[in-house]
Amino acid sequence: MIAGTIGRRYAKALLDIARDEKKIEEILSELEAFGTAFRGEHELHILMSDPAFDVEERKKTLKPLAKALNLSPTLLNFLCLLIDRDRMDQFEDILHSYREQGDQALGRVRVQVTVPEAFAETSEKKLKKILEKITGKQVILEAQTDPSILGGMVIKIQDQMFDGSVKSSLRRMKQKMMQVPIQ
Image (tube, rainbow, N blue to C red; front, side, top):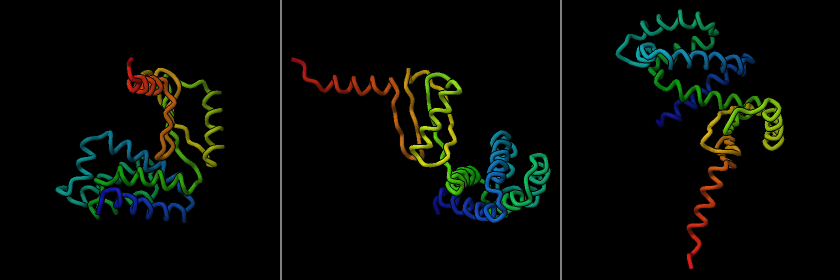
């Protein structure tokens, strides 16, 4: 089975439980908090992912961490299931898939916007409003800066990319100029 498929299946199962409990957003927050700890501590990542370590030892390590992160019993049980089934190595795929499926269930979309310098708050609000009108969904704007694009912006909505950067415009202009025969 492909790694992404496994992640989607586990994410869907967790989402179904979260939907029944009306805690889609809370479970996502908890997953992200655990993900930060999981990625941030190399030893923890190895302990949780490596089947060479005993399942009970891994669960024993997970419980105080879950308490420190204030994880719900639902998420703790889910993480224990991943340990039991030796699927902790799929955690990032599960998190990514849960985020996508959760956003879809809540009628929202994440939009990555790259600009050369930080947005003014009013500009960010205007862009968000425009994107919500276009997508018909609540937009979660994830802005990042990249001075190399020179000006304009690059917008990524799910699998679609809209590149309105000055850097790309200059590159396209150069390509067109290279195609013009010299006389």
